[in-house]
Image (tube, rainbow, N blue to C red):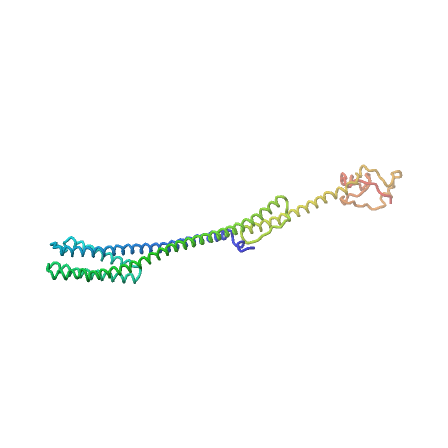
Length: 363
């Protein structure tokens, strides 16, 4: 008797369905976990890509504001009236470009994926602020419109501002290289997460399918085998076989049905044996009276066989022996001759058939 046969059919089926549901939940959890890992890797890759794009914009903006500073300085040297004013075309473009650069650097600092990268971006923001401070001095010198002021302004543009711009470029190159490395790592992580996730999903799905198939096979066979055994025994019963045993295994409903069938066969066999014995007894009882009554003849019609009536007995001879009772006759019914004083015809009316007068033996 297996473990499943000890369980009721309802509990067995409920356990099987619950196991299948658990397997489905495991597969779903694996899929969700895999999707989460892939999503995290994809999000990191996207974030790194956006960071790289911000660094590209920052490098473009740095070159832009440096070029516009050179442009308005050249305008001042050419004698353009408002070249050093904030409303001048070249200086206004410079101010716009450097503010754009600062905003881009601040956004990139917020999106930085590592502490080292964030530190580099903070250094770039500090250098940009220094560049703008020096530019304010340059614009002031150009506004004085003197030879010494213009010379000092030219020295700042060519000297200190170029040095700051180069430092900004160096830091931007360092951050860009780190961002490229991070992007490559994020892309590799996303690819590995996808590959691992696919393997996990396929593995979990395959294992769950095998377990479900094995469980379905075991549960099905635990139900179909006993049912088929009972079916075969019922076929034998339909053919008149009452002797073959009913094999009962387990404690489920099928085992209870087999037990009831075995009890029914036992009761039916007992009843058949009782009927057979009763039929044999009735046959024997019906044959016995026929053998006893066959040789008899009617006493009224059969003539006396022991002595002829040539010499009738005398009265003393007829009454020399006491009267005898015959089996099946009343006490007053005694054998006598039809005309005697003790004759039943005279005393008690007609003689019964079983008390018919018979001849007397001589004394």
